[in-house]
Length: 82
Image (cartoon, rainbow, N blue to C red; front, side, top):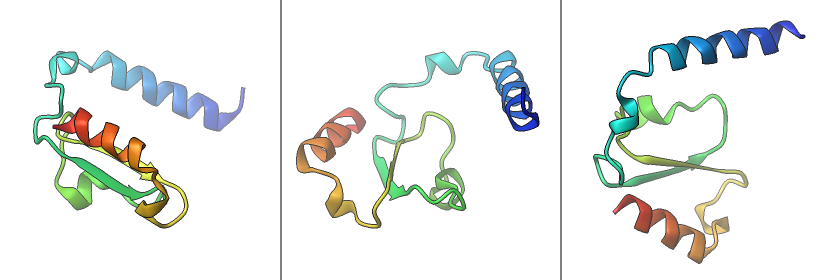
């Protein structure tokens, strides 16, 4: 196993051990909206949009433009967040 894989697996184990009642978060999201953002790993949607877990759907798009997200996909994402 690689060191990176071990680190990711340990972080996942810690996250799931402390998951608590997050399975009971509202669906659709509590703030009832979706964020469409770049998939750039340097961006943290929770930080720049003031989100907490369960607050919004976050859609990460490769390609630099929301116009690349086909209308039916955008409609489904919007409907799931409404």
